[in-house]
Image (tube, rainbow, N blue to C red; front, side):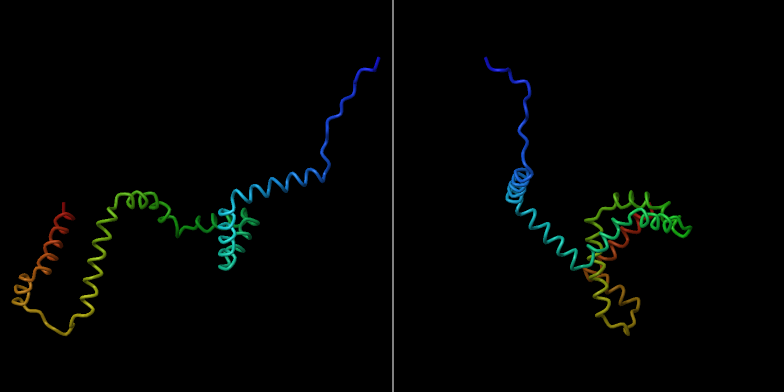
Length: 154
């Protein structure tokens, strides 16, 4: 009779076989994520061209030191009011009606452009103001201004 098997060795891959398997996995991953990899390369190229990549690299190498400088700078007395008001400012930005503000700023810009093109040497008398109220655009603007002042006074 044959002797029983008492020593079992597991198959161990050679170093070359491990390398071949790893390369195959990397090839498959590159193939599956080709678009993302190309976009990543474009992003790195843009960061390099702008000089930002060097800055980011230097910051990561010396992040503790750099963050220490930032904290030291922010801790100065001149920034105290800003830091105290920052949370309130953030809440204020959340309450602003951006659409209405954009519309208002557009109208304000149009008014500034009109003011620049208008003659600044002309004098306006009381009768000129009364006549101007008949102009629908001026009347609409004065009405809006009065409504704004009423709302602000409430």
